[in-house]
Image 1 (cartoon, one colour):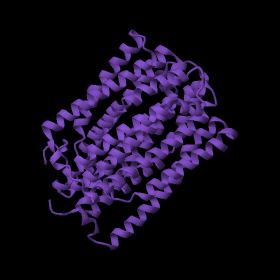
Image 2: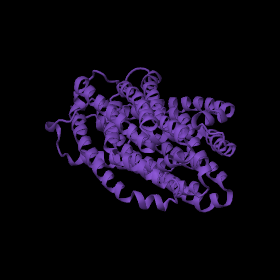
Image 3: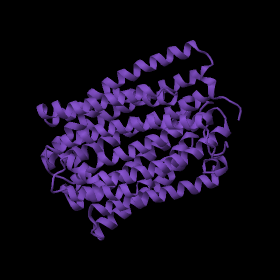
Image 4: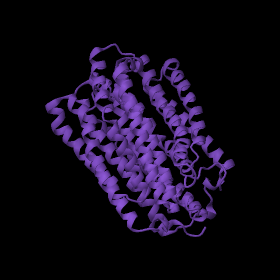
Amino acid sequence: MKAHTLNMTEGSILKNLMYFAVPVLIGNIFQQLYNIADTAVIGNILGDDALAAVGVAAPVYNLLIGFASGLTNGFAVIIARYFGANNEREMKKSVSLTYILSAIIAVVLTVGSVAVLHPLMRALKTPDNIITDTESYMRIIIIFSAVTIAYNMLAGMMNAIGNSKAPLYFLIISTFVNIGLDILFVKFFNMGVAGAAYATVISQGVSVVLCFMYALKKCDFLVFRKSELIWDRALLADLTSTGLSMGLMYAIVSVGSVILQSAVNSFGTSTITAHTAARKIDDIFMLPLSTISMAVSTSTSQNFGAGKTDRVKQGIRYGIIISFIWSAFSVLICVLFCKPMIQALTGTTDKIVISTASKYIIWNVSFFFVLGILFVLRSSLQGVGRKFVPVMGSVVEFLLKILAVAVLAPKLGYFGICILEPIIWIVCAVIVMLDYSVFIKHTSKTNGILRNFRTCS
C-alpha cells in the first residue's frame, strides 16, 4: 500500500506540505487553463456577448460541480484518516463506498440539473441576447457532469494518500487536449460556445481514463473491488456526513454566488463581461491559497488519524505563513499589472470593461491575507472532524450575499459587489478562528483522544 504514496505523519511537516502542494498547485493552474482557454478563445473569436454567456453559466456550473467536488473531497478526508492510521482494511472499504456514493451523486445531479436549467436561467435575469448561448453551454456541461465527478473522485483519493503528482501529469495532458479542441471546435468547426463546452468534457474524459489506468497499475487499492464493498453503517454514516458537510459548504457558497450573479446581470452585458474577466484573474491568484489549504487538509487528516496533535497544529501554522507570503505577492502583481492582464485575457479594448474588472480585482486581492486564514482553518477543521462550524460559516456567507443583492448592489452599484467578498471573508475568518481555538483547548485537555482511528488493520 505504501508505493506511490506520501505519509505526512512522519518527517518534516514543511517539506511534506511543499512536496504535496507544488504538484497540486501546478495541477490547479492547468485546471484554470481549462477555463482560461475557453475565455480567451470565446472572447477573441466570438466576442463580448459570447464571453458574457459563458460568464453567466459559470456560477451555476460552480454550484453543481462544487457540491459534487465537496462530497468527493469529504469522502477523501475519511480515506486520508485511515491511511494515516495505517488501517488498510477500513481504507479499502471507504474506497469502495466512495465509488458507489459518487455514482449516485452523478445520476441525481445530472437529471435534476437538466430539468431546472431553463427556469433557473430566467430566474437569474439572463439577458435575452445571450440566454440561448448560456443554456447551450450549460446543457452540455451538465449532461457530461459525471465525467467531472469521476475525475474529482479519483484525484481526491490519490491526494488522500499523498499522491498529488499523478493527477497533475494527467491534467497537463488533458489541458493541452482542451486547448487544441477549443480552437478546432470554435474557430474551424464554427460550433460557437457549444464547441468550448464539448472541448472541456472530452478533455476531462481523457483525465478520467488516465487516472483510472494509473490507479489500476500503481495503486490498485484505490480501484473499486466488489469484495471490499461492505455496508458498514458506521463507516457509511461517517463518509456521508463528512461528504455532505463539505458538499453543503461549497454548495451554500455557490448558491450565494448564483444569486449574486443575478445582481451582476442586472447591470448589463458590459458589467457581466468585466465581472467574468475579473473572476477568472481573481481565481488564478486564489489558486495557491486553495492549494495550500488542500495540502494542510491532507496533512491534518492523516495526522489526526495517527493521533499526532502537535503535527496537526504545526501544519496549520505553516499553511497560514505560506498563504501570507503569497497574498503579499498577489497584491503587488495585481496593482502593477491588473489592466494588461484583463486586456490579454479578454481581447477587449472597452475602457469601461477594463476599469470595472480592475476595481473588482484590486478590492478582492487586497484581502487575500484574511482569505488565507479562512481557507486553511476551514479545511483543517473538516480534516479533524469538526464539520458544523465550517458549514455555518458558509451559511453566513450565503446570507451576506443575499443581503448584498438586496441592499449593497441597489445602493452602491457594482462597487457593492466588489466589497462584498472581503466583508464575507472577515466575518467567516472570525468564526473559524473561534472554533479552532476551541479545538486547541479541547485537544490540550484530552491527550490521546485523536487515536480513535488507530484501530488494528
